[in-house]
Figure 1 (cartoon, rainbow, N blue to C red):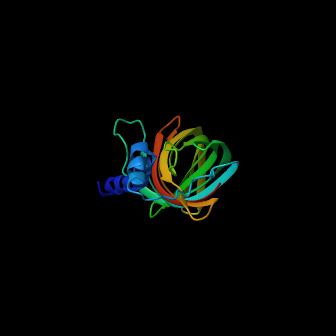
Figure 2: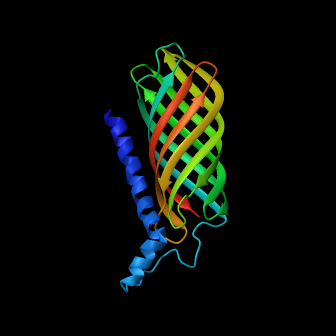
Figure 3: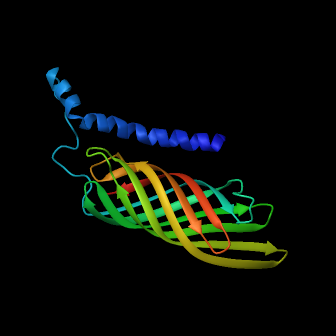
Length: 209
């Protein structure tokens, strides 16, 4: 329950700047400010921060759980490290398209095995508010489940391939005209012939527009 509360707080922290930006987009709100004689300077005016090629990379933490389809439901979360790299092109100021590679990995001690869940997806990243740097994204592609188990002096390795999907939200905090620090909250799902995987991640990265 504590972990789910942290995920909710993280999502609210991402939504707060978007709500403030939506208020700025309200024309009635703009007129009321002009009526008070206060001149507002918009740092987005006259320029487009999202243009052409873009690339982003980051790290974070993720809670993994699985469903073995045995009627027992989802397992408890297992914490691990997350890394991602994504790149693509700009369709408009509101829409980016690209590809994303993501990896979750953890060492199961003292069970003496390691797990790694990887994915490669085509993604769409959408900025719903005209002047906001808040975004939503979705992705679909391929998944890979890698297991390495050590039994005495023998190491066994198995690999499964499946499908992956992802949904997420984030916010680009500008540090310069073309560079942003980007916290994000993501849910990654993977489907295999023998089981399903789910990873909920909190991460922070750097985005170059």
